[in-house]
Length: 279
Ligand code: NAP
View 1 (cartoon, rainbow, N blue to C red):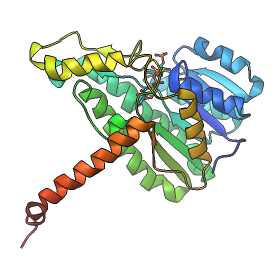
View 2 (view 1 turned 180 degrees about the vertical axis):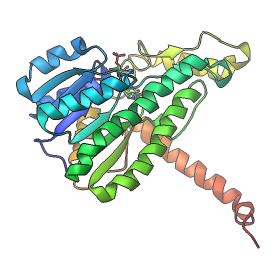
View 3 (view 1 turned 90 degrees about the vertical axis):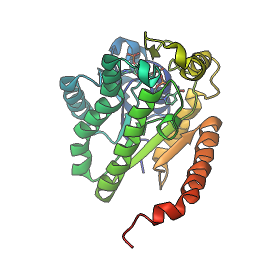
View 4 (view 1 turned 45 degrees about the horizontal axis):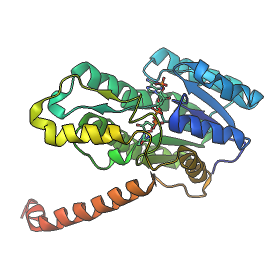
């Protein structure tokens, strides 16, 4: 269980959920390493909290910086208790419209960056036999829709990696929580969103319509980043933190509907499934 004495290390704090979380940790009296690609975007936040805050430059796709930032954080505070892998963004494209360089860049941030920061922080947590890794996935890490297939692929990858990680580090005293927000009022569906230049008419009614509806959510998303931050802090402080934490009603509704359809689909084909083993 984390306490107010815990040291948090949060990626992607310039805006949105990362900034809200860093703000809540610091305003609650905690200590935080507040990282951003441009540390100037978090300088004001760090400056308000004196030696309880450290602002660091961190692009999670920059291997050298990942190792250096973790070392700088550990040198400043002696340890990292809670790692929050929050940095990430979306990409709108039907699968066929996807551009190789954009897809690889998306995976570099949303998946490979998260994995590298995790590997850099784990030795210190293992040595102390304590710590908590919070991976910000998405409801889109459980359920996929048109136009965001590559984004879902990164978040499904985060979910799989995180489940394995939980099984491996649990016995070493380290907790893992996967956070699955629905629509939250951040830059995600606005300025941060990337889109394929290629748009194929055949997908107008599917991916095209979902592109438009996703962009239209910007500024109207029901999720409150400050409340998400409090929920994450509460989960980390819980005696028994959840492996998965859905955030927002839409996430809850979509996830529970998916449970029902998964079960119905498995049961509908049960006999075929069971018949595939040796007689
Ligand atoms: P946001 O306001 O766009 O914030 C995204 C943050 O990630 C920004 O600080 C951005 O920094 C940072 N970032 C992007 N690429 C990075 C990189 N290579 N290295 C370091 N930082 C990087 O959106 P958000 O909603 O807060 O997103 C936070 C996380 O929540 C993401 O993982 C996102 O996928 C997830 N999520 C969001 C929603 C939602 O509806 N908002 C729903 C489900 C999941 P820059 O300012 O430098 O670009």
